Amino acid sequence: MLSKIRCLSRKIIVDTMPFKMVKNSIRILIIRIGAIGDVLMVTPLISTLRDAFPDSCLGFLTSHYAMPLLQYNKKIDKLYAIKYRKLPYWISIEKQRLVRIMEKENWDVIFLLESNPIFASLVKRFDADAIYGFKGEINRHLSKFIPFSPDSHVISNFLRLGSLLGKELREFPMSLYWPDNASEKVRIILKRLPPHYPRIAIHAGFGPLRKKGKKALGIKSWPLDRYRETIIRLHRETLASFVLTGTSKEFTINETIMDGLKVPILNLAGDTTIPELGALLKEMNLLISIDSSPAHISAAVGTPLIVLWGPAVEPRMIPISLNSPVVIINKHLPCSPCYETPRKEACQNNICMQEIQVDEVVKEAIKLLIEHR
Image (cartoon, rainbow, N blue to C red; front, side, top):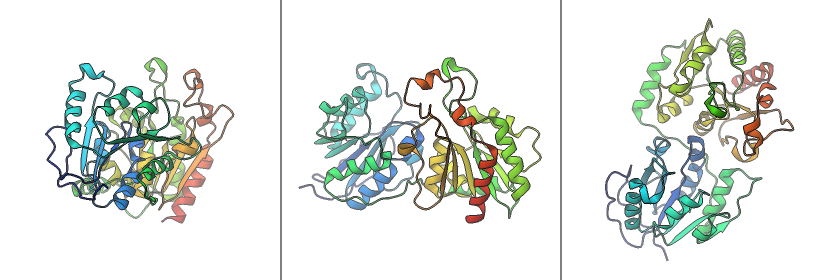
């Protein structure tokens, strides 16, 4: 029987050899390599495993890009990151080094939340006692597997997989943590906006770029002139100020939205880390966003949220919050969802997004601002 002895130390990145651990403790490793939103949706599993096995050693292997999302999560004892996941093992010094580290960790069970056989074969080299995952191409690498339910949210699927450890797992919200200096930075930024009026964040984003790297907006994007009209109307009706978020690559698109607007507005694209973005959205009265990682971050920190939804599969990927409202505006057109089909690549006119009107966005925004002052 696995004993419950907590890890003696925390590990932040795979840059030093792990500390020697107490034998026979329950040692759980979760693996999810992906984008911010994908990894954030694993945090309920982290919380519920910590709740069910409070003295366990809980590790997490994620992408180099998503690592800041988990860096301040004290429910994780050991955090590892991989930068070049697609390189073959035989030429990847990073993967070879990772295997040497993982072999010494003696994991009792690994929850593999990836479906790529190449990556599953890498995890098999970690020499864990058991590997649990979802039924599919990687079955031969797994000790136990369950079918992934396409009609259920990914969070629910992750919790079902976690229940293979034999305990009933409680439902937890998504979670994101940040240091005090992130909160202080946000406080200084927000001094540039008028006090006593609603503060609305907007994440326009590119969405995934179209084929051949064209500088057109992505298939998940909403027309820029509608963001402008939404901002103008919400300011006129509520005196709200605005913050535009995004990466440095989205700075220019935000400038286009802001051009000529006579409202209090900040372009913070590229100016915040992931933890700082969480601290920023926590201070907002509302976020209006396309289907992108800031929407999931907003749901995690408890900020009211409107998501402009188009080509993605809604039932299993929408942001979920247990303590704040989430409004999904989805026109449910016959050609949607197309995101995981060949139709996505052939789409020349994302009418699923263009059918969303400013009137309905403004109406929902004002309703949320009134209900959640």
